[in-house]
Length: 276
Image (cartoon, rainbow, N blue to C red):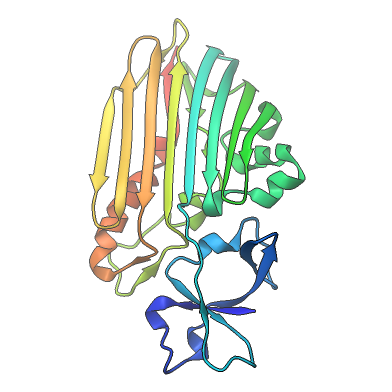
């Protein structure tokens, strides 16, 4: 059993049990070490939640305090989709997906690869007809998926609104949708993340994308954000990328965090609208 202590509060000379975040069980399977919680169900490998923490081995026979080292990994979502709008009633999507670190549903995929279908928002699981697992390990999963979607649009008069697919478990899982204008204390981020989506959308004859090209790019003390839309007569290319580099946001960094999150949380960035 090990205790998880934020490194900021760890002191070998003076311990305080109130600083312990939680207790985990160290498991060794064929030489691979990872950590599991004894009190809560985890969809992922605990090891990737332990950045900026010190692990203290709880052993009554130890002569001195023993700390453990652990590997760290980038938490990453990379999704590339080629979307072909056939008409107002149907579209197809060929998706390449890479999930790394904490967002990798390793145990779920080990039991049944089709369970990845439930990890999307904006993409009904019943529309996914094929799942091809290219790579699966504790660290990373790489998959190819095929979706054939009927009635993909919300239609209002001559306007057609389509929701872009997104993976559950990324930045949106933090539920930092509404941030206050100011903050007087440190904000703890659940995990660092590199989350990137690229959509190539083929537009059929008669459809017109109602917005024009757009680029929003922000780099600051917390991370990076890019929203980019390129448009031509037959295709739209949309790139959405957010990278958060820190587990904690100091009060002096809060405005940097807020400006990135406000753009990412903008509801309009999750949809594309066409006119017939």
